[in-house]
Image (cartoon, rainbow, N blue to C red; front, side, top):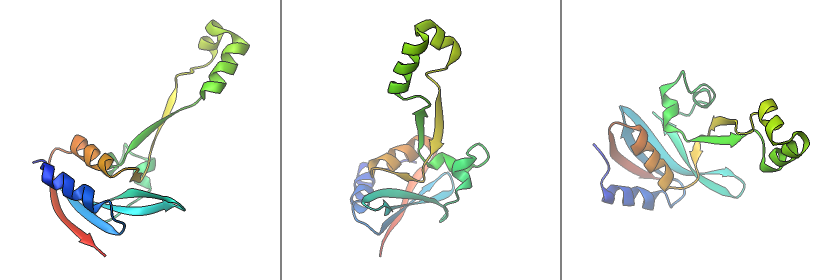
Length: 137
């Protein structure tokens, strides 16, 4: 089962207002999406699985199935400036032998930056997805 265009539009509209919560059922888990403050001047869509958020889901994603509902981000070990400096010091061939300049690490966040992103992500990682309800405070 998937979300209709009307349901997606309704969810997006509700996630534009702070303190609104939208509930979606994905693979027998109840996912709550709510617009919340993540820093002093930043709002993001928080994700709660079965009403909870546990940090261990982010730090040990291989051991917890709930971690698939959170966004995965990648960051390079070396910035473009560091890569250029190392290449200048060691040379193009030697730097490839000594350093893996393309190496990246993976991490997860407990929120999405836009309202559309969690919907697209949940559709991609879930076998079945259905809209349950919305709540406003």
